[in-house]
Length: 235
Image 1 (cartoon, rainbow, N blue to C red):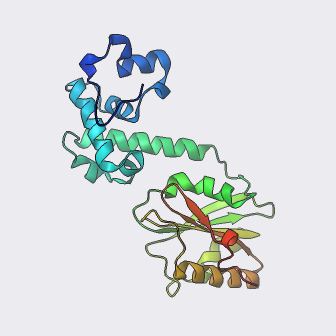
Image 2: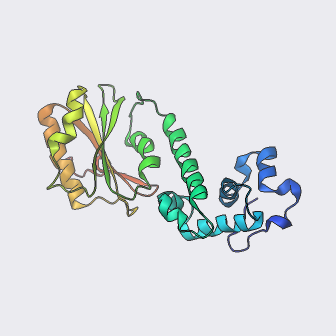
Image 3: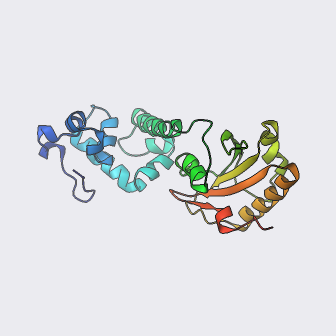
């Protein structure tokens, strides 16, 4: 059963067997809507009907689960009816989800295509509120050795220290690296700086005999491979 944001079904109108907590117990969590799951995170305190309506309103105002994930714990506490305890529960649940997904990728995860690297990084980087530049270090079989966060802030080609990009790869004797950074705006379209950074790093990699396999830009639930688009990888 899916709840409508426009015409929310009231808790008291539900049969006992159709209550969110009962349905979760009898039929599994996948039978519940996003709002119902969030309302259960809020706990048993307070009026159940109001709790469900609060969860529905929060989802609507934030633009769904991705919007809620982008909110800091301080911002969550500004939502009427959400105090420090409820905000902490929401952030904890989202963090557990992120860790569960990442747990499926062990440190020897092999990159066979740009989509593999995007899958590895998308859930963690899609909703960051600042720009992060990360370096994936790979061995000779393109297996992940380490993922390093190099910068937090705007990626600017004039400020990038290319030597820092390869420092960990040199230490690990990596055969290749992949650059990954996010656009907090949600639009993964490459900028002129993004392309210049790719050119600079690719050129330095040739001198160090460490190949730049790709440069991925992560948006909100989407990504772009500069290698696939032929940007910054000219001969």
